[in-house]
Length: 119
Image (cartoon, rainbow, N blue to C red; front, top):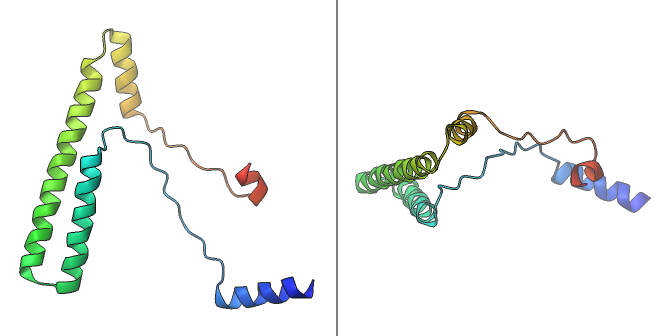
C-alpha cells in the first residue's frame, strides 16, 4: 500500500540500489593458514603506510610484499609438484595436467528473479 510505496520512494532517494560485480574464484588448496596470516599482516602494513606515508613504512610494505610473494610461490610449487608426483599412470598424469591448464570457472547465472537465483 501507501506505506510500502512511500518507504520504497525514500529508500530509492537515500539508499539507491547499486550494482556490484562479484568475482568468482576457484578454491585453492595450496592457500594455507600461514599465507592467510601473512596476507593479513601485509594489509595491516599497507594501511599503516597509507596513513603515515613515510619511507620506513614503505620499506616495510615492500619487504612484506616480497616475503608474501615468495611464500606464495613456494606453496604453489610444492602443491602442484606433489599433485604431479602422485600420478601413478600416464592417464592420471594427463587428467591432472588437463585440470591444471583448463579454465574451469563456473559463471553464476543471470539474475532473472530473486527466488530463481536463491533456489
